Image 1 (tube, helix red, strand yellow):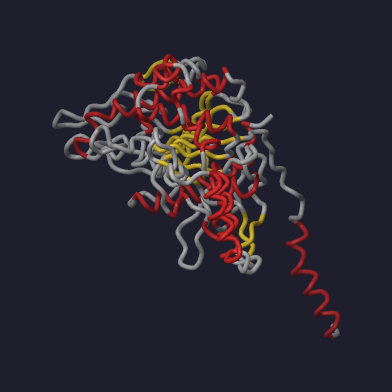
Image 2 (cartoon, rainbow, N blue to C red; image 1 turned 60 degrees about the vertical axis):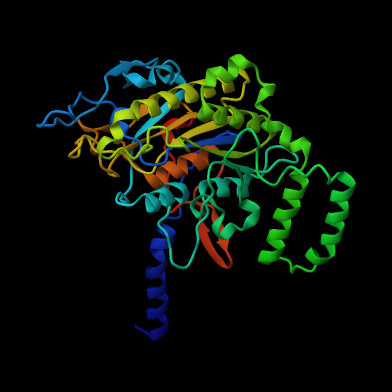
Length: 421
């Protein structure tokens, strides 16, 4: 064989696998316009909440693995929750519990929190964007003069924009009564004085080179300045809502969820709502040792707020347009530790989707008899992320740019097709 013929044949053989698999993969495209992401930091025990199994015993010397609470029926035949989710049980036709989500990061909360928010492990040379920042980047704000992404909770890098830059970042607050810090002008700074300050700043910021990090910061700063003042801050006045509705949502966490509905109405695209900022049970969802004793209080508070949010969005004809996600960094094993609590488990755990125009079925995926491993329809975390993005009309395989380096929205994630029409 001549050298030229050999090289031509070798090139064709090498290229063959590339062209053999070039059939486009069908990605479902949802119609959700907003996303409310409820974060349960610490690791929610799926076996005590959304994936109940046989009753266990954590108080006797010979402990018996299993759920701590009784199972109850829901509005979806054959789907059960634990007894402390009785209000959510009544609206399960709008909900799908993804019972077989899994990842391999179980020993450290920060790493697991990061992977659930970004879909990727921490890297030494790139900071990956969070799901909220990707949605903010791809979809922008849904309403004029509103930020695309608001975090009701404490900020950290896992929730941030990573290489997407400041424009895909969040506005954050921890107190629903005061709203975001720094957005209310002092009394002595009126509109005229604020405008004068902006005019003084403009020549300096105009020197920023295009496509630079300083230019990116400039755009974020311009947005922040446009939000300062009463027009934006009025959305945080929950007293505009009826007392009966505020009571329906429950306590502090419920008021954050009520605020998230108001922000959806105002045009915010993505809102993350952190649960249990004040550790009402002493340990949060991280129920090692005696932490289990008041776990039911957390579940009941979640139940009250989540069910109210679903009903409220439905009453405002926003439920089909708003995807609700309940996320946590990992689950809990059925066995108990020495003092009756539970450890960490990433082999299978529950995350929740509601609304968003999806074809809900109450529960997706089946775990084994003690909720330790998937038996049917496992959902790797990357597929859970792909499902969120697809529901929001974003292609999970689309490539974002980290400088000159393309980075796909997910690492090969595939949306769960059963949830789409």
